Length: 343
Ligand SMILES: [Zn+2]
Image 1 (cartoon, helix red, strand yellow):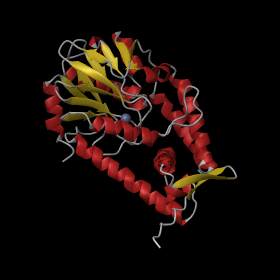
Image 2 (cartoon, helix red, strand yellow):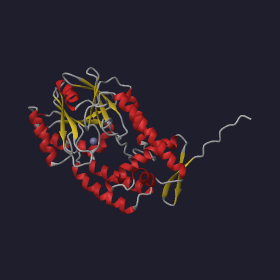
Image 3 (cartoon, helix red, strand yellow):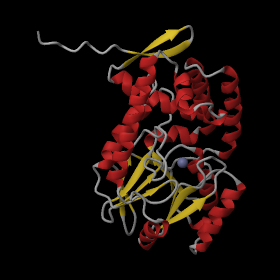
Image 4 (cartoon, protein in one colour):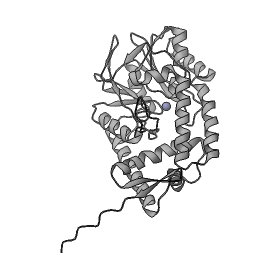
């Protein structure tokens, strides 16, 4: 079994002072797991989306643990997504807590609105280039603008770096940057207790979607999100941990088994896409339709990310190439070299 029962894994964590707070979100993913670390400093890992309902449940959850929002001394950001980040600024403002985030996340957390606009512009251009119809792109733009209300900026007062140690009175965490699901994913390892706070880097019940993101800081090519993610998973697979506390859903106890399952799934999906491309050249949009049929507008970018992640694998392996026809990119199969015959 890859997932422990809720009571088991979360109870083990709670006994060590790590309390799960399940906070509602308006998104398809459902609730988000935030964690209260009952230590010195009193620490909140992620805060949930910026909404009245989420804020109420967060304060009630803290009260049930005998704490108040005002007592929080440190808020740690695991990554840039709004279901985790939205309330961080408000919690910091109410409590005076420090806000800690990995260096890569600082500009995004601090300039949230401008970053989201730039991401949306990139997403729209990428969707059009890969064959998604204009009306779908426009509809998704307005959905995304509406979703932005659940996010908010925060000032990072403590910048973390890959390899840092984060010291509490009763524990020390090792900070590891694990990009892929987002460019800023950060996981926190308690080596003594063999526990990993993984946020959305590794989820038990669903695979983490490696969302494609725009090129940053002087780069011209977009990062290969799935390729990056598989590298990050390889690093996590090598870790000796017994309990993984995720950003959604139940804890994971057999992380190597789960990661191997994810590797196999991505391999199968890449092979399946290669078979579809070998039939005839197709755009990423056509590939998504071949796999999933008609796609809901809100899922258009997620499914495009999923397709492009796997075509990146095939491109790197030299099994497909990109061909621009008009303004649209199509993928075509690279002919396999003829088998060498011994005459
Ligand atoms: Zn999330």
